[in-house]
Image 1 (cartoon, helix red, strand yellow):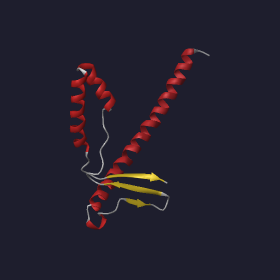
Image 2 (tube, rainbow, N blue to C red):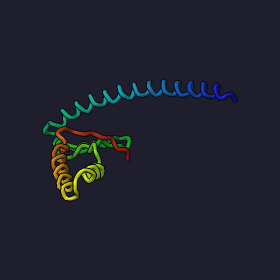
Image 3 (tube, rainbow, N blue to C red):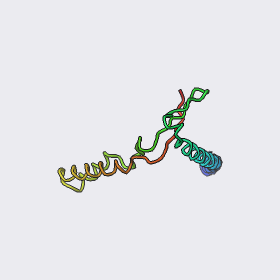
Image 4 (cartoon, rainbow, N blue to C red):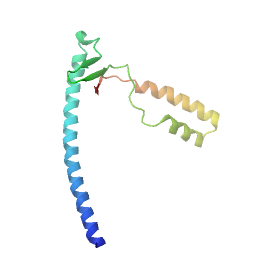
Length: 124
């Protein structure tokens, strides 16, 4: 086959798939936005005294919504601790790198303690 023809076919296939992905991503974004709105409603309800002890909602489809309350979980770390330590070791002597590393870890851990609710659906 002609390489130019093959290239054109591949480019068209790529474009078609990319168009479909863009449409799906748009729908996914809309659904995530809708889920965030529902999570905000759930968060407001979870502040009521009658729900203070609730930590999970079992759903009759075999799944559950797990509730993480403010101050009980940490959000994701954006820079791996290993990478941080490696970076520090590359620019400081090992003793100073370890001191700075420990300071950053302790300080950042406090920042990661959540102040809001978190909800996730788990399939049993």
